[in-house]
Length: 137
Image 1: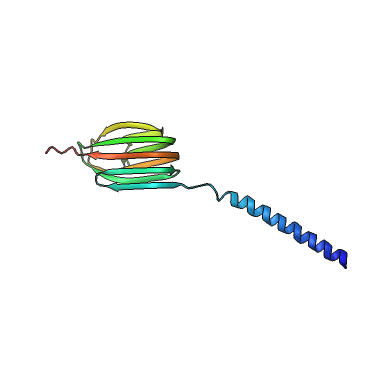
Image 2: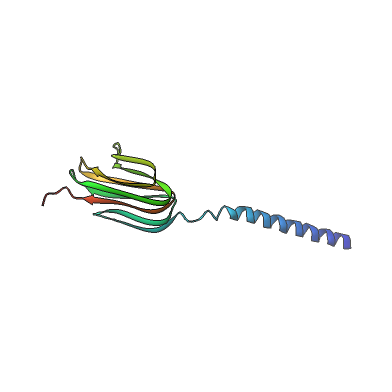
């Protein structure tokens, strides 16, 4: 009888070790880190983000008028970003893969709603898309 109890104790002990090992393996996948830590603003004047981590896609829609310009500024101290600017169903006016640092202006040739998409890859830094009105005042 004592041998049976000892055997049951060892089986329970082995089962606990197996369950603990399985939990450790399963929980290691949960610690992949943050996908976004920062701030983002999207309004009529543009789309701006500042982040200490960007590991996902962030996007905004911006109404632009023919003759407007869009100033694009990217500054990353770590990682990179893929950027797409364009109207739905049309060829993008800009596509940049693996962008780290850039500062340029896009000319807007057609009035409409422009979709701006930024996909970060372990990125740390900031990005801005600023509307420059084409209206003459």
